[in-house]
Image (cartoon, rainbow, N blue to C red; front, side):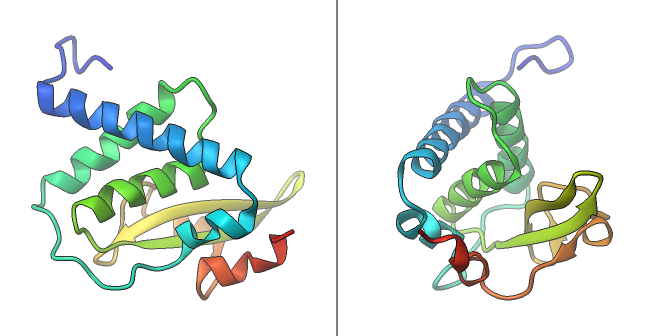
Length: 147
């Protein structure tokens, strides 16, 4: 987790640790619980929060992406997005989970990303051109996977 040859500051290390354990919790929930028990993680927030200061969101995105890269378990886009979502919600940052699909060489490919205030947080701005977004509440869109 080196940053240009220097050690990360204590705040960055705390965010990394929080993100790492949040991703672990998310991954274990997805692996071990039936979909009907974790699908609420896909649902929109009940109310918009006050929001964190402008510098907090990029730091949370960076911490989550670094934690995912340095995790013991593979962290796909859904796990990374749900982990970041949890960190943002803890800080009152309003966000929206997006699910999209596209045709790939091996068939249909799915992708997840977050936005806040109309800005994409954990992907490049062209993600909406690369994937056709599934409209509606993600938990309802994926309900047919419930077994």
